[in-house]
Image 1: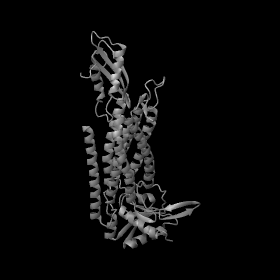
Image 2: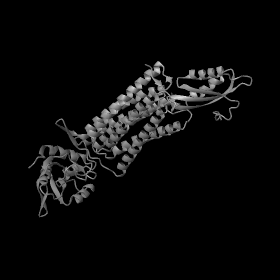
Image 3: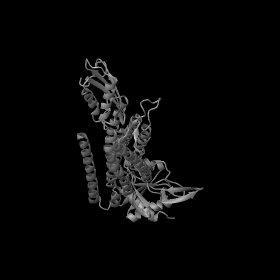
Image 4: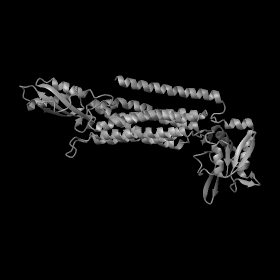
Length: 324
Length: 171
C-alpha cells in the first residue's frame, strides 16, 4: 500500500521512505523510554547526569510529535479543513523546536549555576551484583547505552527528512545529536570528576548546552516563520527551496505566458502554490491552457500537488517581485 | 549539499575532539593519580594520611553519638575511630550541632561528621553522604544510616564506603 499525505499519493520511493521513517521513530521512542529508566536508576549527583535525564525526557517529544503529526497529515482534506492536515508537520516542528530550546536553556542554566557555585559533585561507590565499584563507571556505562543509538538513529533520519521534506524528522535528528553529545559530555565530565577536577563536569555540560541551545533557537525561528507562510525553504531551512524558482521558470516557458510570479508556502511535506501568470497580449488564457499550466507545475515535483494558476493583466499587484 | 557536507564535517570533528578528550582523561587519570581514582579535588585523603589526622565532627544523637564530659562516645564515634585506625591516623573530634558541623564541612574545616543521620536528612545539597552502612527498624519504619562528608572529596568517600561495607555492622 502506498502512503499518502492528504490528497497527495506518494510514489513508491517516497512511500518506502515514509514507512522507514515511521519505523525509526517508533524505535526511537521505545529506546528513549528505556534510556530514561536507565538514567533514572544510575542517576547520582553528577550535574551532567541529572541534565542527561531531563534531556532524555524532552527527547521523547520529537518522535511523539512526528508519529502524531504523520497520522494527521495522511488525512484527506475535509469541508472543515479544505487545505488538508499537512500543517500538523509545522505544529510538530514547532513543538520539537520548543523541546530542543527548553533542553538547551535548562542545560545552560544548570551547568552555569553549578560552575558559579563551584559545586563539587560527590560520586561514591555502588554495589551491583555483589560487586563494589566507583559509581562513575556505572554512569559511564549508562551514558554509552543512551548515547550510541541516537548517534546512528539521527544519521539515519537526515536523508529521510530531506526526501520526505519532513522538518519534524529534521528537528528530531537535531535532538538525537543533542542526545549523543550530552552523553559524550557526561562521560568526559564524570572522568574529570574522577580525576578530582570538579569543574570539568559542569564545563563539559555547558559547552554542549550552548550547541543545543543554538539548534533549538534555529529550529524555533524557522518553525515560526514557516507557520507565518514564509516562502518555502529546504528541509533543513538553510535556503529558500529551489522549487520556488523553478515554478516560475516552468510557467514562463509556456508559449502564451510572458511572465509569472508565484507564492509558495510550505504546508508540511507538500507545498501550496498560487501562481499568477501574465498572458501575451493576443493570447487567451483558455481553460485548456490553464489546466495545462497546472499540470506542468505539478509535474515538477511530488511536493507540488495543490496548485492554483491565476491569469492576470498586471503582475505588480500580485506578489512582491522576487528579483527586487 | 555543500552545507550538509560542512555539517557532517563539524560533527565528525566534534566527535573526534570528544574521543581525544576521553583518551586524554583516561591516560592522565591513570598517570597522575595512580591508585587514587577517583581523586579528591582538595586532596583530603592524601592530607589525612600525610598529617595522620582525620578531622571528624560529632553531633549528639542518643544511641549513635553521645557526649560525655565533652568527649564523644557511642556507636558511630567508635565506627569513625576504627576507620581512622585502618588508615593509621588519629581522630581530631569537634562536637557541635548538625547545622554547625554541616557549616564546617562546607568550609572544608572538617573531613567527615556523624550524628545518627539517615539517608533522609535534609543536608544532601550541602554535604556528601555515604551509601547507607546499616539499616535499623524504629517503630515500624526502616532507617538507613549514613555518614556526612565534605562535598566532592570522592577518594575519601570511596575509601570510607568500601571500609563501611566490611565493618559497618559494628555493635
